[in-house]
Length: 356
Length: 261
Image 1 (cartoon, chains in turn brown, cyan):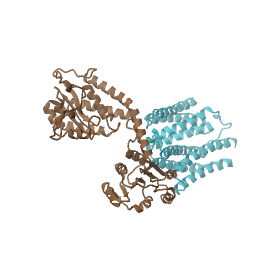
Image 2: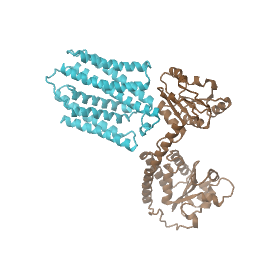
Image 3: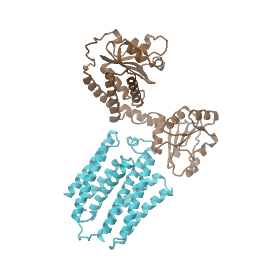
Image 4: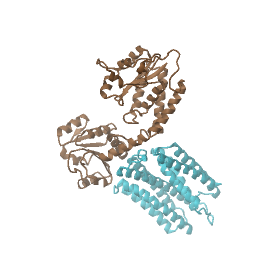
């Protein structure tokens, strides 16, 4: 019996194709009917993949059909976006996916949780058998080892996650912290959401256009405050996210001095996303004030990206070891094919290619 | 024999330092069980050394500067082992080990292990006074370590230059809290040591008393500054480092003066 992976992801297909072939609850059952003895469906916003074991070869068109969620007929172009990997290459692919090496943001850890949930679902529905069990357990082990032995997951890689990491180092626990968003741009909303995900619950939004402030405040379950009072708010808040379209600095040392006097030694974290900047760089000189503009946040994110990129070779070496061990364990040949008695492989032209 | 125990203890702490340096260079600086275990083993060997020396002397082994430095290094390791896990500051070991190595290397390399010219009659008050004061120094040393960690972390946040260690150092409030608790702990012990000094019932040189009181006032002023919010946390951290450097040099002076007395 052979096992294979079939699917498409952000590398091979645009979002429209991923939406058309997103898979559905019935996909595993359809594949079982087609002859697969074990089936696992992994769907995330970036990938749709089937991991399956089958005695006979199943045509790619049939698998793709099982993933299609509408009645629109699939074209030959659609099939070109799919890849198929068999046996050892399938194992390598899953190990890389679980370790975050195949993700859009290299080293992201969410994919491991998604893979674990997909496996749990397959087990619960009786679609995962001994082969997928071994494959998945090995993938989770490989992913864990990549995370612990390399720095592939180290450092924040987006403006929002940089802001969260910095805030946690400045304040420790973020629960109960107060945040004021000045202006209501998309990046500040994302940053605010990232902070809210770590427990920040007191969210205030201030904008020259009150309706826009209300809109964002409602969306994030915060409160809108009048723009005229934003400076007064700085006496209470812990984090200020500024992204207005002002052409001059809104916050300068003379304005901040009396506010800092009232704050005692409570730190103030200022995230200035605006271009031109809303906050005078000199305020970073004050004790307890930590000012980051968009360039410094992006630079930290880029450094993390670079650090992760440097770790890829080490991570791939770990994956290689696990693939070799897995091959040995299952008795796969060096070329990665699995000798089988009951299933002389039915080669079907270009569909038999390991990756289309 | 007893010096060999001390050399082995120093090697253990040195191993912790080397491990930390290697981690720094490989940019995989993280909490390490190895560092904790080598410090724990070093502590056991230090304890064995002090025990052997104490039995030989028939008193607490703090009769010369060599023994005082070793006892201080032992106190630092003791307090680290007690508070390192409590405050989840295991990384403190990476900062503590170099300090202990430094103290023990000074003790081992300088010709300061000179026996007293005349035997001293056992005096429990004197032993309590000296030992509790040195343990207080150990707490001040750990406060200095926490202060140094705070300054490293704060500087990275201010300059936006985030090194690998940034992600492993505790948040600023945790470090500040550990620092102030260690200051209090050391101050209370030091006060007890100072008060017990008046019950020693032996003539003490006024310079020694003055220097000891100066250290007490210095740390008292830092704590006062902290609670009246006269100083920002960064300044408190700086003062913790400076005050320990001053206290360590005064300890030398106190010993020097004590021997000449």
